[in-house]
Length: 218
Image (cartoon, rainbow, N blue to C red; front, side, top):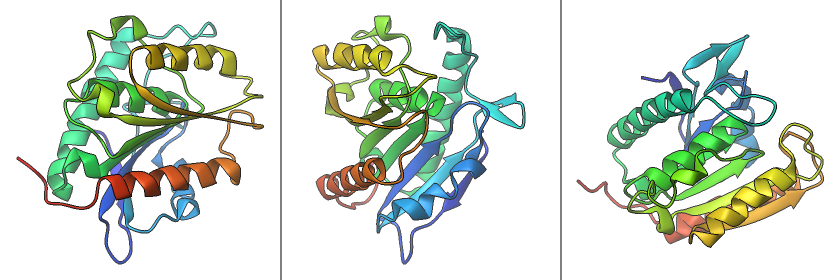
C-alpha cells in the first residue's frame, strides 16, 4: 500500500482529493498547497510514489526524450489503483466524490488512472505533466473514460516538459472523445499561485456541484 496522509476538511468533507507529487518530491511537498486551495468541503489525501528517488520518490523512470519505463508505470498504476480502492472504502464515498490531482509525473498517473477507471471521478486536475501509452487508447479506456472531466494546466515557458509536446497529446485525447479543459499560463515547471490556482479552485467547486454528496454505492 502506498504511504499517504489525510488532511480532513473543516467542519467536514463532502468530497476528497487525492494529490500525487512529481519526480523527487513527496506528499510533504504538497502539504502547503492544501490551505492555498481553500475549497470548502474538500479533504485531501496526499500520497508518496512507490519508488525512492534521491530525498523523495518517483512514479517511474523518465528520459530526456520523454520515453519512460512502461513496466514501472504499470507497477505504479497497480499500486495507485489499490490506494484508490482503499480510500473509497475507508472514506465511504463513491468515486464521483473523489478528485485526482497530480503534478508532473503525478499528472501522468492521475490521467492514466482516470481514463482506465470503470466509474467516473469527481474530476481530474493535471498540472505541468504529460501522458503515457496513448497508443493503447481507445482500447485501454475504462467504461467511464468519456464521462471523466479533466482540467489540464501547463506553463508556456516550461523548460522540462515543453507545452507543444503536451498540447499535441491533449489534442489526441480530444479526438478520442475525452473532455479536456486546457489552460496555459506564463509560468515554468511550477504551480502559479494566482491565475492557475483560481482556475483549479473554480474547477473543483463546479465539479462538486455536479457531483453532490451521497452515500457510497456498492
